[in-house]
Amino acid sequence: MIRDDILRQQLEKARQKLYILQAKHGFNHASVLRQSVIMDNLINQYNHLFYIKEKNADCINATDWARNFW
Image 1 (spheres, helix red, strand yellow):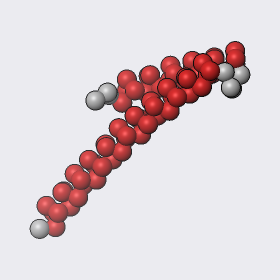
Image 2 (cartoon, rainbow, N blue to C red; image 1 turned 135 degrees about the vertical axis):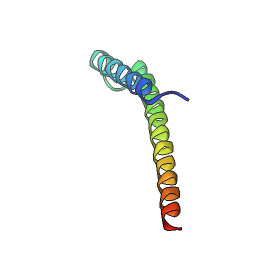
Image 3 (cartoon, rainbow, N blue to C red; image 1 turned 30 degrees about the vertical axis):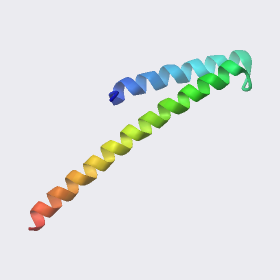
Image 4 (cartoon, one colour; image 1 turned 90 degrees about the horizontal axis):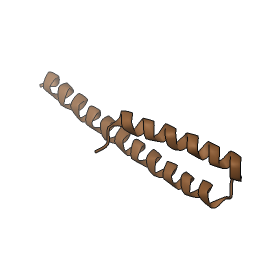
């Protein structure tokens, strides 16, 4: 699985490229739409990674709570 810092760097580079392409070609150009799809995929990966971290943290917190309770 890709690390979140690497993924954030990829997202930033993809965002910059999207901005440049949009400024050059406009919103409806094929290259802009392709880059938008790339950004969407990276954002989905980042959200999935964040969700997994949050879920694992919740499980750890629940386990700690149960240990302390019993």
